[in-house]
Structures are given as C-alpha cells and as structure tokens.
Amino acid sequence: MNYLSKYESNLLTEWLSEMLKNEGKYLEPILDTRSTILIKDICNMLKQDIHVFGFAVDTIEEYIARKSSRGEEIDDPALTLVSTIFICSKYLGDQDLKIPSLGNILKKVTGHVYEPKLIRLKEMEILTVLNHSLPINNNVEDLKAFVTKFEKESRIKVSILPICIEILELMYLTRKEWFYSLKKLYIISNEAMKVFKKLITSRFYLPIGILIYVFKNTSYSNTLDVDSILEDLANGSKIHSDHLNALVSKINEIMNNL
Image (spheres, rainbow, N blue to C red):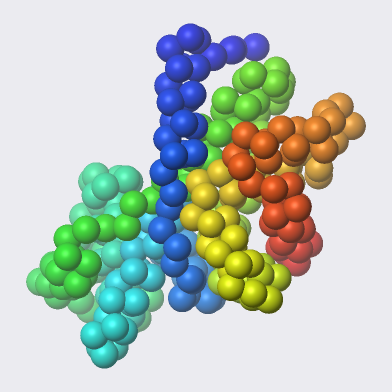
C-alpha cells in the first residue's frame, strides 16, 4: 500500500489548514435539478469532468443572479450554458475545447446553427456581467485533499475517493432540493440561520458529510468506529456532530431516491 510521503503530508496539512481558515461564499441555489442535469449532460458531451461541471454550475448561478439584479433576463439559455462551460474549461478543463465543438453541441441541442461570432460575443458578455471575476470553486479539490489525507492516515486499503466524488456530483445535481430542505431546519430563528450560513460556507461541511455517509453505508461500517470518527472530525472542523448528522441524513435521502 502507498502511504503519503512527508512532502505530500505537509502539502495536505497546509491545504486542510487553509480550508479551516478560509470560508466559502454563502449563495442560495438558483438552478433546479433538471437544469443541473442538463449542464452535466453538456459537460459530458464536451468531455469535461466534475471540476468544470461544478465550476459551470456556480458560474451560471452567479451570472443569473447578477443579471436579475440588473432587471435583465437570459436571452438565450442554451448559448449561455455552452459559453459558460467553455469559459470554465479554460480554467479547469480541456484547454483544447474549440468553438466548432460548441457549435456542434448547440445545433444538436437546439436544432439551430450558431455562428462562431455569436459564441464569442456571449463569452464576452458573460465575463463582462461577472466583472471578469469568476466564482472560486474549491469543492472538488477540497474533497480530494480531505479524503486522501484521511484514508492514507487511517490505512484504508481501498480508496473511497471515487465514490466520494460521485456523491459530490450528486450533491451538485440536486443541491437546490437538499439545500432548501436543510434550510427548513434552521429558519426557526435568526441565530439558527446564522449557524446554517456558517455551515454552508464551511469548506469542511460537505467533505465530512460525504465521508461519514460513505463509512456508514459500506463495509467500513463493520471495521471502523464511525461515531468516534465523526466526533473527531466534528471537533477538528468546529462543526457540531448534530449538524453533520443532519447533512448525512440528506445525503442518504438523495441516494435512496436514485
């Protein structure tokens, strides 16, 4: 079995330290599951992975929010979607993604021919609306760093990272549903809502929830003391185990509804 080198361990320790110190941005989901599935399908057609998919979802929602604040509507959803994926791919995905490929996808999806100029203009318009500042997306790398360090130090023989990534993808696909379902538990008071916003912006919240769900629903539940692991992770992340258990329950609901 391969264990972490000292150098790798130090890098992951630094990453986890940054996760603890730096919070994400609190944004309420806009896209429904049908829309996120469409984004995922287009990413698959363009051979873009979960990094681009997650980044595209966040970027499109940011774009929609800013357009709405200006009293503007999305004039061409299909063009907007494909152009956003193109932008995100330049940062995280396939650098060789070309405009003709985007035109082919648009024709397949809409039945219409899009000139390359239209795609370039939409790309420029999206970047202008976002002030040329895309929403930072660390979810995939945060999960990878967290799970990799944990499974190596815990001497887990078979990597759980692939299934953790699959669950993260499902969380993106269904996030409007589970987000507002969880929010209902916290709208009882202003203080509870402050806690909820703190949870959503914590970079440990999703990784821990996904990890604990996997441990509880695989053969590791027979060999690991999952409750003790949960308490240790709760203490280290400064997130109470009750909140983490609530998230695990939502993940369980998602998986049961597949």
